[in-house]
Image (cartoon, rainbow, N blue to C red; front, side, top):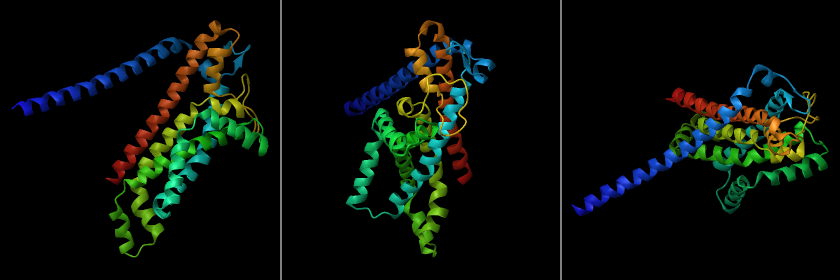
Length: 286
């Protein structure tokens, strides 16, 4: 009886701590969103979202920053998504599982934790100076792509590992080639997880400041980039400047909160897109 009672008490305390932790996290998140929404909601308007900044960014909108963020995220996706997924397929399905493969996998996971400022400095050396792309949309997008690549590879490989080996063996037993078994029996079940991790990585890249700070983001640029070789405005860098570096911080504080709200909505939208894609693909497979 005493042992059963102890188990019930331990179970109660365990669930209590879990619920308390969840409640605390949600409370902090809701408080944060409420504060940003209350202070930035009044700034949001069609003019704010569709016009360029004016008079030293004290008036006007943030459309060039929205467009620049979208453009650089698109370049990031073009580099990181196909390359990362292909690398994950090779490591999990084709590579010999020896010391070299384990070393490569360990290196990729370590790169996932490298601070973004390091990627920014590396992007300056490689893309701006060596490859002579200059401070541009292309340099910033490629830098963010390199930063997102380890995340994409890791998430895609973990999704591939969830597919049972019997799916592969069944296709091979029926005479299918290695690629046919992967394409027909593995990828359809792994793609939801692969896309989810990829979109989450892109959402993280869209909110980064340090990599684009050195490679192409501009402080004030009231027009859209005409080519991939031009500088651009971006929401995270624009927010950083408005909140810390502007010469009239108090005057532009509502604009900073509005920019923060737009950036949060953008990132949450990308995260929700990942959830919807995963749900629909899994439902289709069922």
